[in-house]
Image (cartoon, rainbow over all chains, first blue to last red; front, top):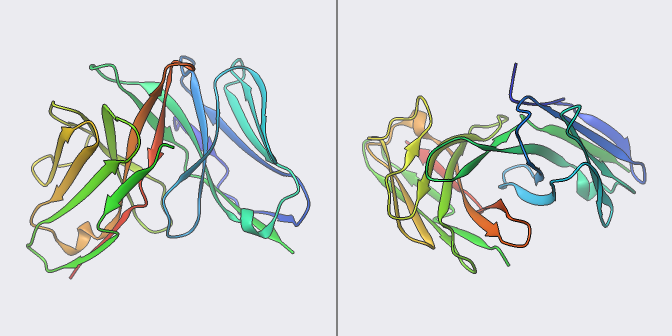
Length: 115
Length: 119
């Protein structure tokens, strides 16, 4: 089983709709969760971080976390064509000595917002 | 805040040469920096984690003698691809870890990436 799983998509939604992106993770100890957006040919850009169960809203984005179900999601309201990108779910896992954590990334979900 | 730069943004080199990539955190100190590689249409692959002043920790399958990492200061880490070959052609991305005391957690911020082409 992969440590972080995402549906690869593409997820196609019409402009103005809500896009729902999902992610599951395997390590129950994980405490920090991140959503990154990556445009083609570019590096990932941090969109949201979430640490507690429940919802966290930032503009058009809402992250949802359910640690009991090991599930994290990202909702994008009023989707725009400029939201078309690959969305990477990342889970922070403490892996080594020296006190550093490392991010485990999902394979990403490609979102296509069509006019 | 939390800006990470990378240089160069792209490089083309001949097979057998070495290439150095710099990663800098511009407005924060990063005790930990990460190096990733991404092939077309694939996800990020963590290559190594570097802590300032100590040896890098490499992921399984990554040759430490081929990918030399130096983390000389809290704002600078370098990756040197030694004796590069065409199969090393890829998109190399660094990230810097920022610790936010208020949240008591770490967040990674990515540089813009370096596209390496080995002829």
